[in-house]
Length: 424
Image 1 (cartoon, helix red, strand yellow):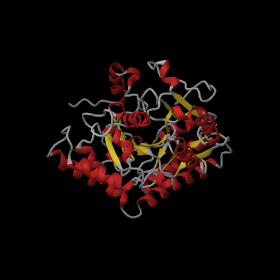
Image 2 (cartoon, rainbow, N blue to C red):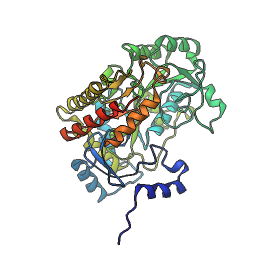
Image 3 (tube, helix red, strand yellow):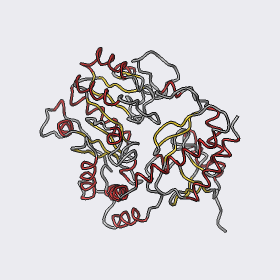
Image 4 (cartoon, rainbow, N blue to C red):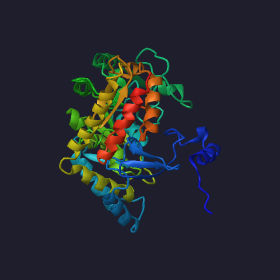
């Protein structure tokens, strides 16, 4: 007789081998067994409409047959080589033809690596030490990225606050912090520190918060004037807000951008892309030693991820795909409005149709500190009710995908209505 393992049993086993009982990514009480299309199923057999989509990569759905076919073909000819491979070259060609700032590309395996190398690249290219980032902006797990990501104490700008143990104080001194959407403050920091600032790194859509009209262009202009490398972190927004990413959607071109999630088609792949003169710092043959940036990775550009990414991007290029994605997002937004408007509870929907969430606050959300005014008790209650209603989502994000259909919308609408009714 086969022993059936429940989630409770798997949680017990996980707690003995993982700190805090999990991978560190998500609620360790959720142990997913399978995904197909727009749905995922846990080890207890509960099925959910998936608005988490693996934290973004599964934009064309779980187990897409076209993606599976090319992956299966590649598996028979090789999984990884540590050398150049044709699929990786082809994917780089597609990305460079699609993303406005992308003249050349280097692969890595994760978004964290991509952002780390992008900041290091800005330093190598300019010979300057400091990075300017925005409070609340998420750029992975490097020491610089863990400055003022989610600070509990609100210190005066531009002082950086470390959000992690194990980071030397010296890192704080080379990272400057500004409030998102405040171009006047950015300009004041550049006026004071400009000759020492190598790069400004920004999520064009910061977590969920859209840029104010003119903010990104003013940031572009300020960086150009001061000789600062402008880095767009498009790990999330790349090939999501538009085929050409946030730089296409918002009409502002950075010097470097980082890509991940969508470009790997569900496998581990990310990239740093940018202008050729900056990317030349990766080429030891043409730059002096103090500007050469060493970069390598065992699985960087592996062919499995490359073929999955190529097929995913091919699917996204098809006529009407982004119209469909955005219409799906707008439909889910309207479901929330229809249910929450009846409750008389302060809320707002923040983000873009492809990536958004409900924020339970009446204060305009323009930056991290505004967002902190959210009623987190209501947020948690709403999300847990949604999960009981058969909907899986991140604590503060809803990802739209191309696989959601009428049946999914019915489940979503019922779950949202119930979650709204249960709010206090």
